[in-house]
Image (cartoon, rainbow, N blue to C red; front, side):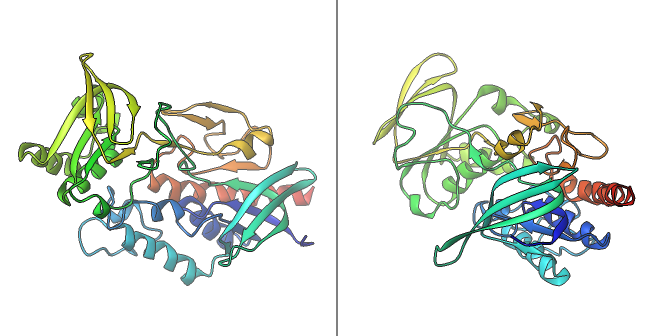
Length: 342
């Protein structure tokens, strides 16, 4: 265990964690970012070649720094932007290191225990001490499930990466958001015989503020439907997945069996709040799922010295994930200076 006591331990190296590290360096704080995956790990899990839904000004770490070839950056362009931000500013980030336990309090300090995994899969534990901790863990840890028979079959996936293994295969995409629509579009465009099962309220939703499908996804999706390459089923529930079919109930109550080779269940995901709860952090219902309770101005939870930022809070967009740490890290720095003087 290091004898150094960090001012700020940051858990997660997504946009919120990178922004917090940059702000901590500017404030002269001693800090470290711990990331169990890679830099911008959530972005890396997006489909290969995906064009982002947002324009550069909503994604970039510095104004004008992200220069995509087209209007919106691809997954690869955005990943490169975040990685080079880390390299160019020499941010202190440990990747392939997972925080497995956090204990302590603001008065005596917090202790974080981690497990490191090398490229050769060797493992060893480390321990860090910190005066404050910022959780920037994202909301992709646990894909939501339908909890139906057959969901554990090898052909069922809860993340979509690429369409190419499924050319001329019977593919079903279940979900109502942009990610599900985009996966169905990619699969259909690249030769999979694709069906999208979507709830009527999601299909008929046209309000962007209510989570409606982005128009640049819906327009080509509807073109695929009109040209007969993509089928949409408005459904009430998926009943069962078998080796060669999917049984569902349509929104009119009609049972239907669809021949099937692969299923993508893309109905959202949730954060892992277990470490926060162990520390005593209270939670509350969010827009879609459970989120930690925190002060709207400081993002400090009910546990003094424990802060939150990013997609697993009430702020659901990357721009907020970048902007919020720039506001709260100076507050953390000021609080630490006051505490030290006492």
